[in-house]
Structure formats: structure tokens, C-alpha cells
Amino acid sequence: MALLQFRRKERPQDHNAQLAAFLRGYSIEVMPRTAAKISDFRALLPAGSRVYIAHIEGTPIAEMVETAARLSADGFEVMPHFPARIIKDRETLADWISRYRNAAGVKQALLLAGGIARPVGDFENSMQLLETGLFDAAGFTDLHVAGHPEGNRDIDPDGTDRNVMQALHWKQSFAERTDANMALVTQFAFEAEPVIAWANALQQAGISLPVHIGTAGPAKLQTLIKFAIACGVGPSLKVLQKRAMDVTKLLLPYEPTRFLTDLAAYKSEHPDFLIERVHFFPLGGITANTRWAQDHGGQNALPATITEQDHA
Image (cartoon, rainbow, N blue to C red; front, side, top):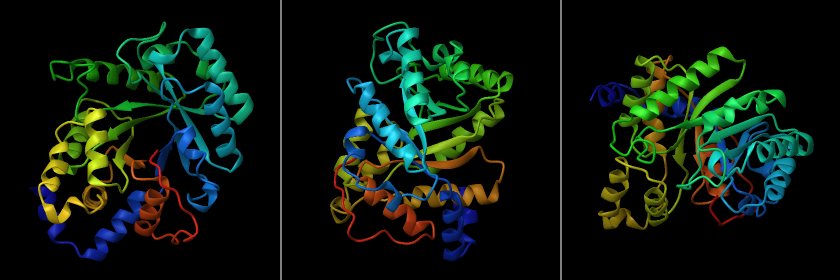
């Protein structure tokens, strides 16, 4: 309630300025097959933007590295995924790291468990990847890990978040005893107040890692509900389901305006709030997502000639 109360006192232009500030330095996620459909990312993204490359099981490492090299050559900060459960062994991990460094100049990585239930090899979680020391030896400077604002039933089937918090404390300790620049990158959510409560609870528990909050870009409501269910998005899914019950909104594309405006307003009131950046999952298309971000961040509109339909 406090969040809604302080927002009523502000003017619409205040909200616009807060959102624009909150969107500065946003990142976006792509996959090789969707990146291939974009002729020129420089016409879409601000110079130097961070672009995560999602590694889905079955994607050849050569395609991942080729995409990374292209984006790096265009001046973007490239952060490929390293899903622990699809990496066979230490030698495979070392090979991937070497390819990214030598062929694409990559020095950043998102380390996560991965979306499969059973590991194909020696690794099960991101902590095991960090413990190898291979990223540090190769000169990687930024190592991000996953955050779970709505919990993670794969890690804590009982819903207690006990194992998630234990892992976060380990990662906090790793950040403190190394020189890696670490941050938590989260799954997408749709409701601000539970996310605010989660981030504040982390801070109260002694976690100080900056948070890059995940959000879905503009997309059809049916598309978002499908991905939300597939990705295990929990309580905030009810926001989409409630919207789907309103026939006047059912065919309108979802936009993350309210969600991010609420977070931006809270950040403006609480500068020490852990959430520092926005990370987009362009489920309705990379072009639609970047156009929305630029329209709400005070940057120039995208050229009308650029088109791209598939999601990332």
C-alpha cells in the first residue's frame, strides 16, 4: 500500500523521468537463431549495451560463439549463458571459455544451473562452475548468476527457499573473496510489489549483490502466458490471467510499463534498493522490445524499415 500511496503524490512526468532513468543500461537476451534474423543490432540497441546469449540444450557451441563474435564486433558487451547441467565436464567448460575469449573477446558470463532436470555430466549448479577457477584464469571480469523473486521449485520443492538462500550466501561470499563483478539476473515477473519485498528481504539477509530484474518485453498475452507457465513463473502469473479474463484487453499486447514504472518509482524513493538494472526477455520480438525501451527511455525512435517477428 505504501508504494501506491507515494506514487499518487507524483505527477505523470515524474513517472516518465523515473522510468527513463531506470531503463538506462538495460540489457536484452537473444538466441543465435533469433539474432540471425536481425540485420544490424546497432540500429536497435544503444551503443555498448549488454546482450546475453541464451544457450538452449542442443545449440552447437559454434553457433553460440559465432553470434557472440558478431555482437562483440559491433561493440556490444556480450554475456553468454553457461548452463551447468548441459556441460559435460571440466574439459568441455574450458573449451567453451577458450572459444569465447579467443574468437569473440568475451569476458562476461551468466552462470546458471540450466533448464534440464538431470545433468548430462559433472556439473549440476553454477557454484560448481565458479569453483573450477577457469573463468578467473581466462580473464573473465563479470560473472552473473540467477535470482528467483518467486522462488524456484526445482531447488526448493517445499517452497521454503532454504536452498536458494544458502546458495545466495555462498555466491555473496564468493563475490567478497574474489575480484569478480557479480550480479543476480532474474527470471521475468509481472508484479512489482512481490519483487520489491523479495529484494528487500535479500538485503535484510545480508545479500548485497546488485539485481538485474527480468521482465518480458511487449508480446501477445497468449504468448506470455505460455512462456510464463513453461518457465515456472509463479505468483505474478495471476496478473496475466486476470488480464486474460478481460475481453477488452485479451487481444491487446502486454507491455511492461506498469511493472517497471512501479519499480522505477520505488528506486527513486530508495536509492539503495538492490535492483539496479532492467533485463529484457524479448518474447514478442527483439524489434518490438527495443522500440518500447527506446520510446520510454528518451531515445530516438527506431527506423521504420527494420522488421523482425520472431521472439528471442
